[in-house]
Image 1 (tube, rainbow, N blue to C red):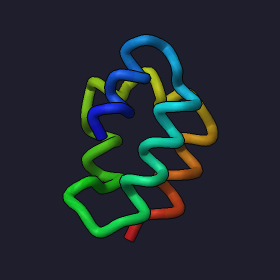
Image 2: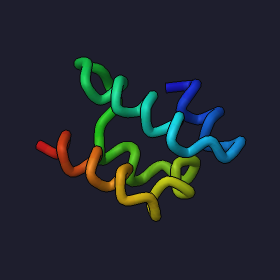
Image 3: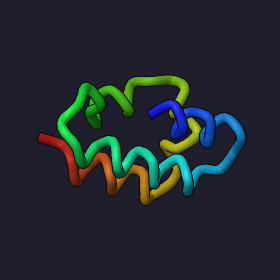
Image 4: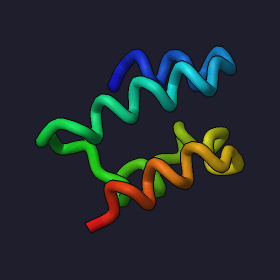
Length: 59
């Protein structure tokens, strides 16, 4: 999760989404709701792949 945040901050959005995909695939505190509401991941909101990832793990 930390790497996803770092990648987002430095503008490596695809790498950030790769990290988030892994984080969402394992049981943890990370959730689509959390990622949608976290302002640190706001730059990813406009990327279709990010939205598709969140939709896939939405319960």
